[in-house]
Image (cartoon, rainbow, N blue to C red; front, side):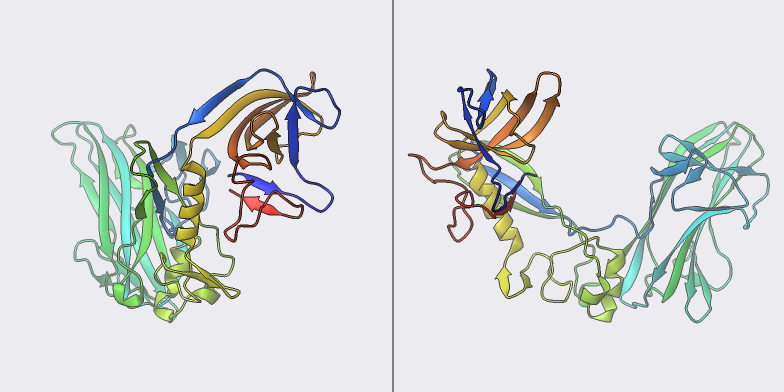
Length: 396
């Protein structure tokens, strides 16, 4: 991402020259590259979707080597093993010894959970291992329901996923993954909790490493969103005569501070657990590829981004990698090469040599400054010359 910013008293466009005038930039010999014009590229976005309603579902974040971030330890210890959580061993199952995490949910009969968890297990020959995991829904009315992995239904009494790894015929070393659609009757208002229990084995050399425990919410199509929600991909053809494929360009969506006030109807209120952000149609989280409206401005965000990207890659683009001697240059500066048809460059990377007062810069061409070539500079959608006056902000 590039950002151009100016005020009434400062414009970051700096000229380059071989002269030594104090108010200009001197470029010492460097290198120039040419990016070919693109023929096509693919615009993708995932609507800012969360992979799991749980925090740190893949155990990649740790407060310490024995404390996984966002998970609560009760009556047990664990340790980090790479990006996995190694469980403690017991010789008899104990439901009071576990690692757990819970999240609030909202009553939504049209919704269900997509549950996925994975773990590695090692059992030496002659010593079986048993892995246990459970999901409990606690309603706002005070009732508990456990998900029954055997029947796919709910139980008012304790039920857990229980997997025996039989080592009677020899050593067992394997990865086990469970991927199911759970709570298909609807999600209860209250909380959902995942419990990962100590595994059972008679052998002190046996181990279980948990790789992930993921829960994501699926919304039925009648609730306004397609189930399941996948990435949106759109192939953009700029010029069929060019054979260069720019590949995938991902649209990143910012977080929305107050998602609750934007989510209607109530049947999709759990959307706050699904999205970091989104492209909105009025006040509803519907049709994420549709319009983005607000403050009287209507336009298709995807189309605007598509046009912006296409504008910069439809022609060959110069890239310069040069040392620059200047006290006036800043990482936010726009460089205008006066001896190169007044081409404008935004700095992509830069490092500062304090001893010699030299910037080492990689900059990408973004347009043309005032000169004999057209267009005269970067232009807004309405044709406004973005670099002709101060007080402009542009992010690319």
